[in-house]
Length: 115
Image 1 (cartoon, rainbow, N blue to C red):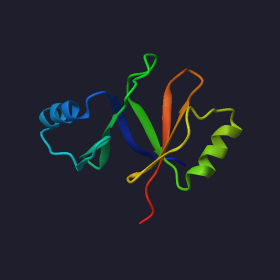
Image 2: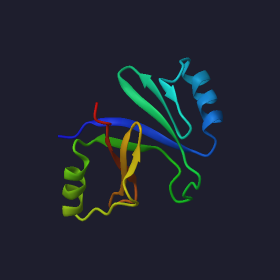
Image 3: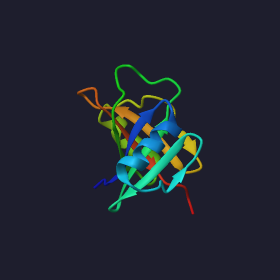
């Protein structure tokens, strides 16, 4: 069974988005890096990811499911006919992979960094 790791919004201006959501949520982010910021809300995570080129067909939220180890879940999804949208992204905060479901919604996998 997979669990939701976090929900992410793609943003063009990360600093402006962080400032807005700090006001909306009334809390400081857990962290704010060059391309990623994250808020903790009642045990859930809400992330903002800086995208240099936002895709016009998808500019909404993306649900990321916890996937440890990620490759196992990528193989499983590809076995169902899902296609990964781009190479796996590797960041200091973990790995991200994005897929499109049969209805055109984008969803992702997240593998946290090894401690």
